[in-house]
Image 1: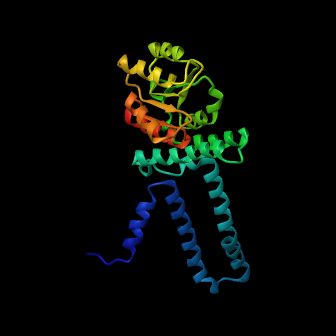
Image 2: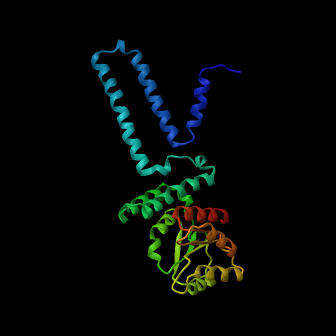
Image 3: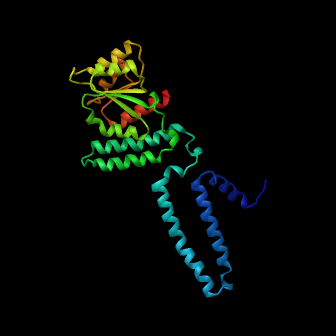
Length: 259
């Protein structure tokens, strides 16, 4: 076995060279290594020759900080190599947590964020996602949301849209059934009580299951009681909640499993 002291550095350099962030780090180390080498022989330099070196050592870290801040704020999705996202499930969970937390904060907190603020944060999340995570315009990224008051779920839909999903809205059970005869969806989200009746969520769900339609179905309602969750499962739903973060996680997990 070789005891060459450069071996650990070589292994570290090889690991860092796999993505842009590591290459930036190696470049900084190289620059400072050369600067240190020059400094070691600074005694042979005149004062006018040492001055540029001093200014470089002072200004360089500031420049690196500014450039790095710009990259993180504008091009964060390009700072990682594909191998950094090898575990797709963990990557999806990370994005789910970030966006779902945004939704929960914007709708449940005491101080509601402005719509402009939400748009900015959602756009930042969208830009941070690699382009290959954006699904094509087909049923794999198409959700049917059934609710007679769709404006109540605007923030939740923005969160899903931030990760490349799109929606068709239905205001009634009959409208939803008509759409489902003509289109295929990756998931269905429904409220419970509508103008048609207090248990319309189950009316729609039961009709689908009787027809053999096994599209993942989630009930987004005002209750999160265990007995209501159990009842939803008994009707054939994949989940029931009143929590936007829990809804986001359940739906995204079903989508990843299905596609």
